[in-house]
Length: 135
Image (cartoon, rainbow, N blue to C red; front, side):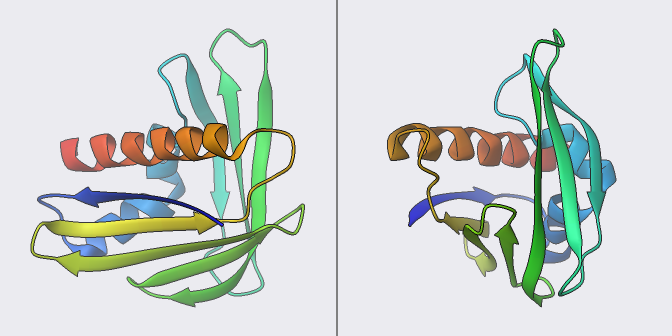
C-alpha cells in the first residue's frame, strides 16, 4: 500500500471535504502538472455509487478516465472506494493543530513503479492543497 498526505491550512474540515468531493472544485485541482487538466468530473458521493474524472494533457495528445465505486463514506472523515481494476483506495480527513490532514492510501498498479505512482499521487494532492488554500 502506498501513502501520500498533505495538511491544508486556513480551511475548515467541511470546506476541505467540499473541495475534495464537489466536481466543480475537482476539475480545478485533479491533475499532477500545469500541462494537464481535468475537463470533466462527475461524482455521486454515496456508498455503492460512483465517480468518474477525466484527466487530459492540455495539448490533446493523451487523456484517461479515473473512476471507481464508493465502499465507505463517513462525512468529513473517511472515503473508501474501489477502482475499476479492483484496487482499493482509502482517504482520511482529520483536524490537527496545523490544519486539516488529508491522507490517501492506495494499492499500487503494476505498470509503473511504486515510486512513480507515489510521486504522481503526491503531486495531485499537492495541487489539491494549493487550490484549496487559495480559494
